[in-house]
Image 1 (cartoon, rainbow, N blue to C red):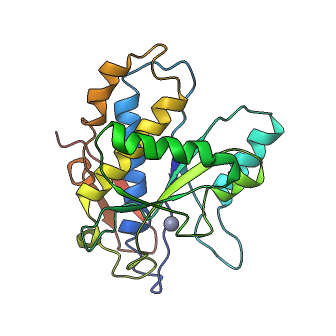
Image 2 (cartoon, helix red, strand yellow):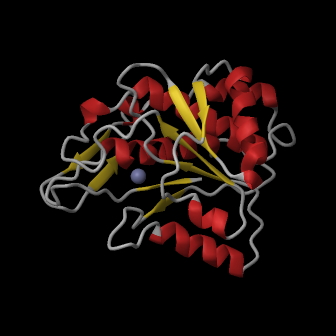
Image 3 (cartoon, rainbow, N blue to C red):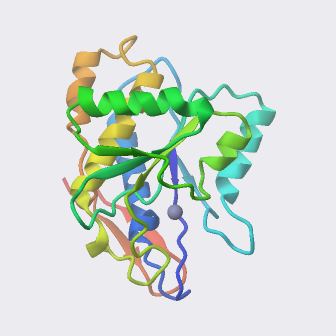
Amino acid sequence: MGAHYDSNSTDPFHAPGVTDNGCGVAITMELARVMSQYRFPHTLKFAFWNGEESKEGEFSLGSTSYANQAKNQSLDISLYLNYDSACYDPGNRSVVDIMYNLGSRPMAEEMVRSNGLYGINATLSYNLFNCVDDVRPFWSDGYPAIMTHSESHGFRHTPEDTLDKASFPYAGKNARLGMAVLAHYAGLGKKVSTNRFFSSIFSIREPDKIAFHDSTLSSIKIITYKDIL
Ligand SMILES: [Zn+2]
């Protein structure tokens, strides 16, 4: 799974990038924290991609490089899960869009099933968005990949994409949805008991508890992780 950590803005000297994509980074860190407490039959990798944001027609550079390498090495990837635009919910409607393609439809269906099974209760929509994103290199290389997306782009790519635009409860739901699907494809129920894992879904902290900070003194964005619990 992964998220891109670069950001973009109409003002190149102020690109806070909280909803796009600091929240995706925070969720990836949190899922790594929780899932690292278990040993699954299949390997889990947590990735932070660079160069996702478009510059002169180039985009998703980090994930493209990884997916191409994976294909060249014939890596068997049963699912790539992407987080982007992961926490914007101004109307508190909890609408989570699942973006998938034909090859990843079963994974999208697993996310729908998890939404009910774990009582996450997001309002799900399907392929409402069609953004260029880090799922695409995986799709191009024939790997199943899904991502979630908030109901609207909001303030992305502007200096106003700041922490006050993030809905932490929304990010928490989004994180739980993804972790449930990841655990399923990592072989939940084989080495890790489903009952024990069930409680982990609810031990996921929301990004305000993960406390990510951004520095906007220059066009270079710095995200630091600080465990405040
Ligand atoms: Zn993004």
